[in-house]
Image (tube, rainbow, N blue to C red; front, side):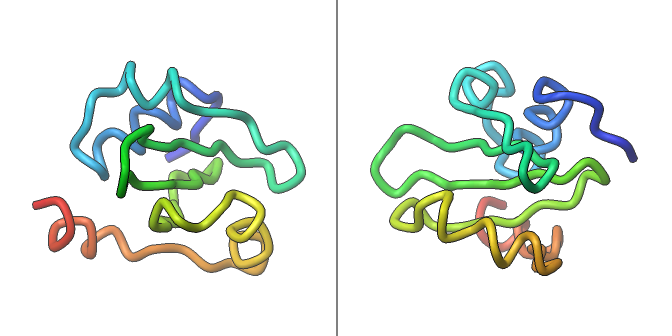
Length: 89
């Protein structure tokens, strides 16, 4: 899979989190320094998600800032997609 833009990344994030793609797209930014896209749920306890161009993602709880996620993401840390079934399934 190749994620070409923030809209496609929102579709990946929405599928993982099982939420509306338009809502995630509205709460997203490009993160060019790591060639990724950042999505967040604007609710207490909402998820933070970085989506890479290859469709892999790094999940974080809402108390972690994007700045806290960049270095682990840059170093290759990703969340196993099977774990989303446990969290949001």
